[in-house]
Image 1 (cartoon, one colour):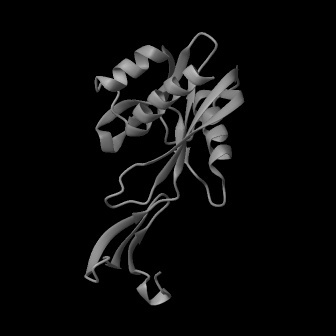
Image 2: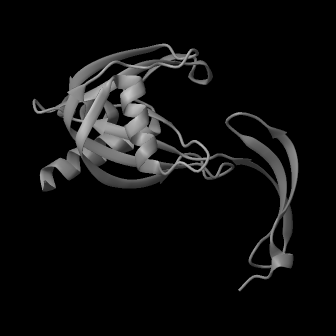
Length: 179
């Protein structure tokens, strides 16, 4: 059991709209102490929205850090004090213009646990209804549909490379077989 004195100390380097970067002094189980660069992130939610024809909603989105457009499931970060499911509902509506009647929890994933504490909550949404999208000013998004089995094949062959999308697609496919 650790005491408060064992808690890591933190020197904040940068705090922005999305991330908080700091140097944290951590104590390993063997007692050695090390400074680690750590990014604190509020977390996010992503949605595999599957229609009655077995197609999944995907977005082609401009991602500067990835060097251009990538294919993703609709997703976004948790706002302060916002729970994961409301985030997923909001992002599905804003990015894809969809609301869902049925929601299934697909678990969580860690995006980059070597230096970041971001947890992404994954959901399967069915019983879909189209509504207007509400893209943010800095988002360039094209919404499209693909057969779920084809999307999973593209995830397995590295045509789809976004980690939350790969995991979300494969977990959605497995969950639908159980429903």
